[in-house]
Image (cartoon, rainbow, N blue to C red; front, side):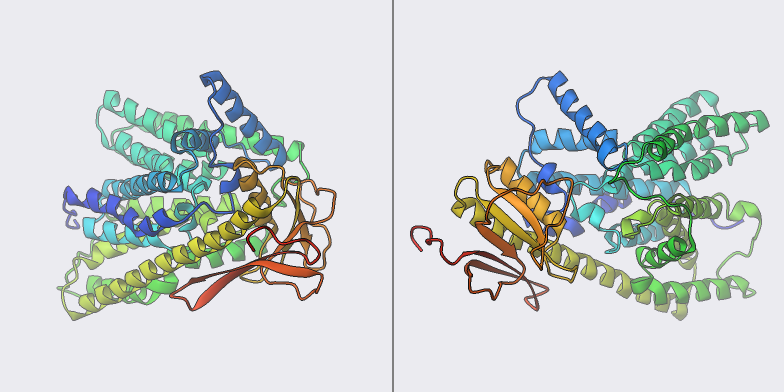
Amino acid sequence: MPTPPPPFPRWVPLLGFALALAYSPTLSAPFDFLDDGNLVYPTGKLSAAGHLGVWWDKVRANVEHLGPFRPVVWAHWQVAANVYGDNPVAWRAGRLVWCGLAGVMLLWLMRELRLHPVAALLATAAAMWNPYRNDIWTSLTLAEGVAMPYALLALVAARKAASTDRRACAGPWDMAALAGLLLALGCKNTFVALIPPMILLRTWTPHLGVRGKVLAAIVYTVPVLLAVGHFAYVKQNPGPHHYDTPGPSWGQAVAFASWMKGAVGLDFLGIGVAVAAVVVGWRQGTPGGDLPRNRAPTAVAPTIVVAVALLLAGFVVYLPVSIMCGRYTMPAVWGADVLLAALLSRLVLVRGVWGQVAWGLLGVGLAAVLVANVGRQEKLAARSRMLWELLRTVETDAPPGAVVEWVSGRGEDGELNAEEGIHFYWHLLHRGRGDVRVRLVDVLGRAVPRVELSPPLGVARFRIAAHRSNDPNWRTLADVRVGYHLGRRLFTGTVQEPAGVPLPSGQ
């Protein structure tokens, strides 16, 4: 039999929590203009019933406008807004704690799958720092970040329920597994992909007979009705701005595979992983080598099977949609994280120079992951600082009822976009300048229709764009330049006003 991994020392969970410190640079970052404009401000002094009413109105509006039913996420946002207020440091400190909890939960899952603590810690660090999916921690509001501890708890609890040999002890763990699953589904319906690996984790045990395994599988499958019911409702009641779900396609499969490559970390760890796989395979197949050659199913189950189930289920749930990004690889990518930890658990047993080479390459790759992560944080913070400088200029100088033209670019890096313009207005609104209206236009001055903002009437008092206009009828009121990546790159923005308007006093 393979040598069992040592128990996790107490310092391993502490280091798992410390992985969140990689996101400490975000503590100095202001609110962003992607989601924060309508989520970070308190709803005022209301009764408990009043807060519940606000929460439910937002949940219902989300279904009507976009389609997702996310009551748990909206509960998190409502509570955080009223606890932290409009203090970005408090918001981000709370987010760091939640990130650390997610890291601990991922380590706990790997411990329950009997993976080596060092291998689990390295794989968890690679997962939590990966720049292809770190927007769930650099942002304050993304559903995947809220759901991650709940989702991992569901997997851990399913495994704990299976590992106990007493039915009375399994009951609380089953309840915890179902609670974690329901909370994750309340953040995002795509976490329905957790159900197949949860069933495997729960039934892969000698302590349940056939009848018990069938019953457990049925109980763990019931929550799928929530996701299916919501999907059916949205398909039967489509809205003009709902997320598009045209059905499975080869294009979406290719896009998912492409993003998985980045989310797994192959851009940084690929060479190290390849060398580790070759070394482990070679040493295991060598007579007298370091690794045991037991190939019985019990030697790989349930770790590999559960990991593959996570990969496949997470892939299938995103096939019907038409968009893709790094965070959409969750929870499928957790299966890849487990596979990486399983590989490294074997590499720990390898002795000799080639094992050291593999570890060296993996260490260099992990360092590159961390550098890329911090660099992305710096870029996002610089973007927010530039936009806040523009907002403060308008907030200070705009007369009552002023109209602002927000020029959305063609999508090139560094240009402004319509979503930022929408949140620009929402920040103004919640800071007491709701009288200032924002009109979204393209570079040719044509209106950009969005349901979130009705285009205001009247002549524009200000023009905001990434670059100043050469039109002599406009003069520059403020030019903002914020550097990032050690000053090698810049975000720029400008506020202009009609040339015939008197300058504000003091200028």
